[in-house]
Image 1: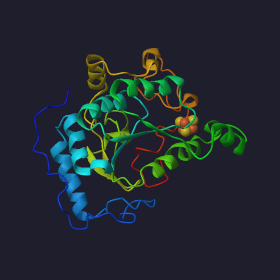
Image 2 (image 1 turned 60 degrees about the horizontal axis):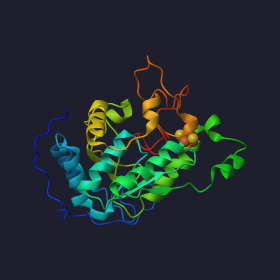
Image 3 (image 1 turned 90 degrees about the vertical axis):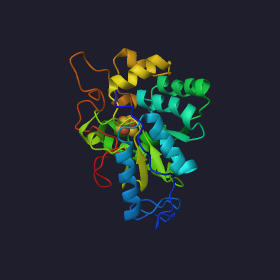
Length: 276
Ligand code: SF4
């Protein structure tokens, strides 16, 4: 487990020059009237917060984010083990936080059911956000399922575009990524600036290992996706997810199996457009 020493946390919401909302910040690719401006002062604040929160518990990181950004903080979850753990933390630390799911239309039924189990246990209603076109419309438009021929475009249309719309009006977003999940994720700070979406990004579980997450889920009785007990360590849309074999050590080996793709584009750090 990561060190649990109490850090000296940065003060919440200092009055930083140039830290007022701007039309698009100076880094966000989409029009987001509520976004913070990506000023040097804000970058310095985030870097300082990230340093100080490096050894903090997920609860402390979530509490800092909630105090710093208030109702301008949102969270995206795909109901993975990490997301479920953060939802359980939110229930005790910041239950009013807005949470959403990118409901692509291709999610497993078990994932959709988990949303209801979380709501029943914690009273947190995750907003299910759908893309412009239903699955039927989308497949008609493209002459068949695009996940087979162009998964990057499919992820872009059914996840990234929806996320961009979802975060309008917010200043910060939080997700359950862990640094040990992939090379892309290994370089994510606890608190940083997400250029792609023009938002502050919080990763309360960056320093957790898979074992840390599961230890807490089991010990605390947090609901999780039953597919994890059937060989699916990482669960996305059903067409792009398979169970892993016993000798596969990469927990994301079952995502976009047989393709070079490893990310849906939400968490990669490349410039806008690449990695999607
Ligand atoms: S994970 Fe697969 S089905 Fe889901 S949006 Fe991406 S390409 Fe489409």
